[in-house]
Structures are given as C-alpha cells and as structure tokens.
Length: 386
Image (cartoon, rainbow, N blue to C red):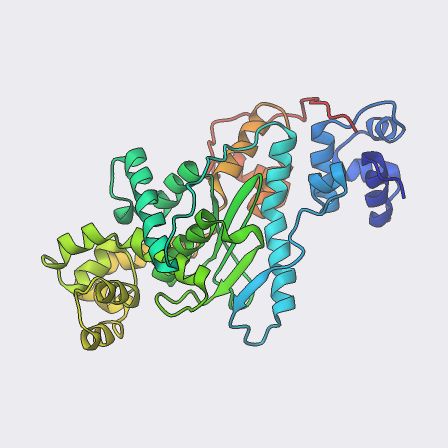
C-alpha cells in the first residue's frame, strides 16, 4: 500500500467507487488539480485536503499521517439499558469525529485555537482535589469576568471556560443513556453533553466533564451516565462530582445566601437541581441527614414554581434542548472561510448541516455567526508538502 498523502487519497477514491473525475467533481476540486496532485506535479493544498476529508468522511489527520484520529475505544461508565457498551463506543466515536475533524482542519490551516496550560492536580483525597481544582478555576474565571461564575447562565459560563481553559463544549445528541463525554489529547480538550430539557442535569454534567478535563482524566475518552451528585464511587468520578458541586455551588456564596433565601430560591439562584443543592448543603453542614433526604425529593420545576420563577425555568429548558456547537471551532472555521482559506464545508460539517443548507441560512442571516458577509468562491492556496 502507498503510505503517502496521495496514496491515501487514491484509497478514498477507490473506496467511494468513483472515477477520479467524478470524485473531483464531488469535492469541488478541478479534475486537473486533482490529477496533478496525485501525479506529484502539484502539492495538495490545505483546502484540497479539507475538501477531500469532508467528502470522504475521513479526518485530515488520517490523510496526512495515516493515523486514525477518532478514539479507538470509549471508557464508558453508563447504565447501558438496551445498548451494549460497544455500541455506545462506536456511536460516540462517530460523534467525536465530527468535532475532531474541525480541529484537524484548523491545525492544517494554522488556525488552531489556543490551549492554555492547566494547573497541576493538587494533592489529597479525590473530593479534596475536586474542591481545590474548583477554587482555582473559580479564581481564574472571576479574574476574567469580574463576576461570580456560579451565577452565570450556562451559555455564558461555558463561553468563559472555553477561553480560560481551552475546553471546547458542545451540546448535541448523544447515544442511549449517555449524558456526557470528555476527551483530551495534546491538541484539544472536548466536552459534550446531551440535548436535554432537564437543564440542571445538563449544567451539572458539563461542569463534571470540565472537572475530568482539568484533572487530566480524559486522555482515554470518557462517557458516562447518569452523572449523580454524591453517589459515584470511582476516585475520578468523586473528584469530578466534587469539582462540579464546588464550581456551581461555591462554599462562600452558598453560606452567604443560605441564611437569606429559602431552598427554592437557592435552586433558582444557582441553577442547580434540588438533589445537587441538598447534597452540597449536607456536605457543608448546613442541613442534617433527615433534612437532606427531604429536600432532595423536591423537583426543579416545583422549586421554580414556589419562587415565582417558572418563566426562567421554561427559558432554560428551551435553551438546553438546542444544539450548541463548540464556539471556538465554529469561529475559527468561519474566520478561515472569510479569509478565503477554506469553503463552508468544514463549518457545515461541524454544525451537522449540508453545505447548501448552511449557505441558505447565511443568505437569510439565520446563522448564529456574523451574518454580515459576502459569499465567496473557493480561494486560498496554502500549500502543504505531501
């Protein structure tokens, strides 16, 4: 087998069952350019490779190196009712590839998002480590925003965490009973959560996955469900739960407000579930075991109703069911398109759309990105040595 870029391109053309000219037409590369590149007369450009990868449903990393970028296996801690762990792993690998392909394209274009250095894992028992990691994270986020992170809406909290820690968050469909997914390699940190109207669960899951990434737990991809505050036994799960609880319910803020607000008002203020809040109050010694057991049986909707905040509850539920792409990746691919370095295809793939659907939305200014643009023809010839 020809272990070169051109050899792998020939391989995907054969696998597609198309002639060279038909494959060129499907990718949007001129037949003459493709022929010259395969013959060694011309180098494949970065745009060529991005288009070939998107058309063939392979990663740019594989075209360049032969290395499969999607996780070979997923470490699943799931209640796999009706699904095997192997089936979850295969489907999660497919979901992960959708996002890691965007990293590949941005790396090829020299537009890889910044990956800030993370703090070292502190010593201590897992729950103590989680608390300390959360305290450090909270300090960083407060410095960046001037606000208490725990009081930010979920979208705003994810946005500041993306830039502070280089973690790319997405809310999307996930298979089976999987609530969350985390994966990190040298060039990226990725956290996914399920689209779910149970928005307090989604918020806690995203914070939990962030805890895994900051602790370095996700070098092997992690998938898990359910994320149960205070009820998981593995050390890394205890640490991630402690981190999420301390980030979303920081001790100073909880102690300062617990005497002023009733339980339902605290649920609304911190945007957490009654069970998560009850577990935190118990850990901080603010309620006894009997009161904890009573409070955790309440529901998020009931608490919002009691606090006259049902509008906020319904608004959060609607937001939590929407698709959220990783903002830094989308921004990077959009900037590459605007600079003429790539077409809309990589961005459309990231957003889970067909290119013509995205183009149509842009023409009617329905995109979440900057709509003030002029559609361009393919451009840019950033050269990559095969």
